[in-house]
Amino acid sequence: EAQVTQNPRYLITVTGKKLTVTCSQNMNHEYMSWYRQDPGLGLRQIYYSMNVEVTDKGDVPEGYKVSRKEKRNFPLILESPSPNQTSLYFCASSLSRAGISNQPQHFGDGTRLSIL
Amino acid sequence: AQTVTQSQPEMSVQEAETVTLSCTYDTSESNYYLFWYKQPPSRQMILVIRQEAYKQQNATENRFSVNFQKAAKSFSLKISDSQLGDTAMYFCAFLYSGNTPLVFGKGTRLSVIA
Image (cartoon, rainbow over all chains, first blue to last red; front, top):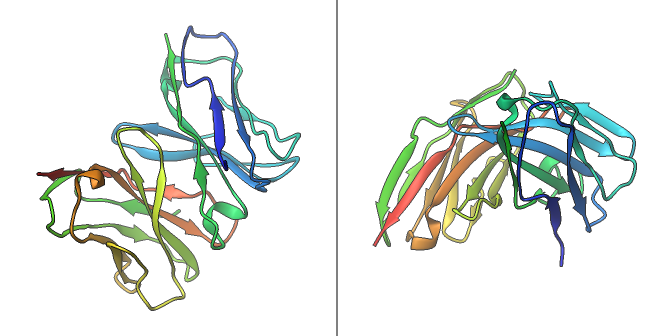
């Protein structure tokens, strides 16, 4: 089954404790991205990757890091989380860039992070 | 920078009726893509419909259709024969064909009432 898998689904942690949210896709997609969703703000793109070892900043990259060492994985790293990073996070992948083609973006089920 | 505006935070519709969700965007580009995504209570993001700006014909997917007015920078979603399963948050999104992020509106919460 084609899917994007995020882990964990829920996490409560404290300020300053490094955390990583993993994202893996099994569709051999080149394009992957991370979004955060906040009430009243919709979804905002954090980082995206066009292919292995190629990453670019989205609209709200501050406080986040990503890596793309393998095609299937695109982890989101919070080196020193702060309460303003409490949010719902989505990973997505697509065959080509974010919908440019007949192949849509596939989203993971979301990760709810709470930073105390 | 591109912006996307959804002016209706919440809407409701009776089952089997038709509802239209509005979306406007601002861009100076001529080649771009527009999307409507659905987010049900399960929180999954599901692509409903997409439109390429260079296509004049409005996209249609079963009960979902769009009214794309390029000059007015408007991209509304019409849902016909509304069903209870259509209850969700709906997001309009814009993508320039260059190397820029996908930009979402703030969403419209749609409730379908039996």
